[in-house]
Length: 497
Image 1 (cartoon, rainbow, N blue to C red):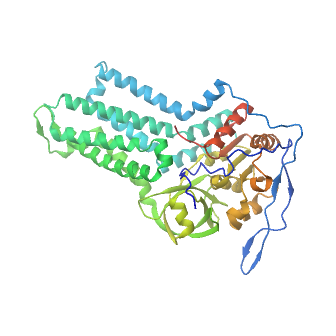
Image 2 (image 1 turned 30 degrees about the vertical axis):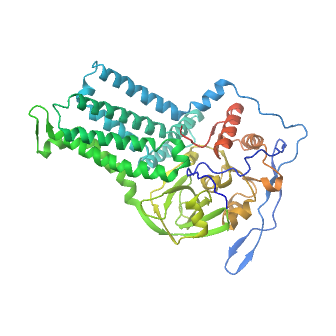
Image 3 (image 1 turned 60 degrees about the vertical axis):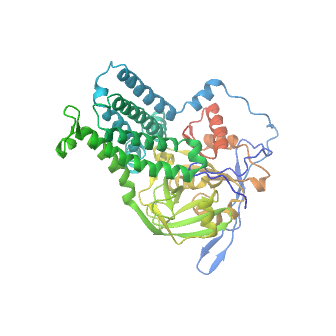
């Protein structure tokens, strides 16, 4: 079996037919025409097989296969300069100005209390990626701003929630810059400082720099295991060296050039409490790690369907691993609701880990019981919406439509029922068919559709307020450009930088 590039972000999905195929023009409204005679349902001894119906799009003679019109620079700039980049740029600029003033000795406070700027940035960076904090933010928005505020305000809420990573990256990079400044000051005044403090500062710099470098998108997306090992384990080394750096720095008296063994003095310093907060935020998710039972259905060599006990809210994602601390992989959760008996993960074969789920299905997996929220978790604040996905991106999209009758699903793939099996097909058939789903089988239809036509038709006929898209990089880019040009509010896959 040829090796497929690993994509670990559960919001990325896959578009099996992304290679250029004849685009089928569609009528102004995609209609469901062919119903299946039955659906593959497993109930006790009896099994009755049925196929899911396909979304049959009629040919429209008036449409033609024209090349895509190039977007204006302003539209492309809007799509490129996302809220993620706005957050990142603002934080870097703000810290950069402060750092410059400190270097020029115009602003005295940072030179005396540099640790507050280092650790303040780092603790905020960690906070933005903490599952508890993220869930609390989503809970606040979903509870207080569901449906009643103006649409622009709700769109802004979703935009901010989706792009908190910009604050994470900006604060991490800024904290690293302040750390370099701090160690430089110690080196300049090395005669007044103890060598142990300088060494601890250098080690902390190295650890933080490796952790940041390993999180660059091209490393994270193409070498997931390298990213995880360095970002996590070197990050833990960085946390330990930060503790040592802070304790040594606050224990050494620059006036008497001697160590102060009084621990009370260290505890009274703000640096101590910053590091203490960082440690708590890092440890909280690990307290929820459990080994749980899993049942695996392998409907095809391309996909494994993992079934876990208990239901889940829509829009959540789960991290799973074969070990307690290594190689965690995130997938969108499919569930009929919080009170359902099971929830499912759709794992496409895209690398060694997912391939092992098909070839050597485990009976137990490690997971964090505290799930983290994706952009779909904010779908409850909208009156009506469209959920678009391709391939295994269905895993991040399906729950939103299963649990909310005001959401419509457009799913583009290849031989969906054969590939994804009766469990997923059954969920779609029982809850969405035939009024709230448009399925496009690219193999049966001879190619992929004009997806933007499908989105426009569904958006207007469904009276939707927003479109959420889960696809790969090229598919997401094309659809986001199309929605922007058409004036349709849309949120796509987050690719960071």
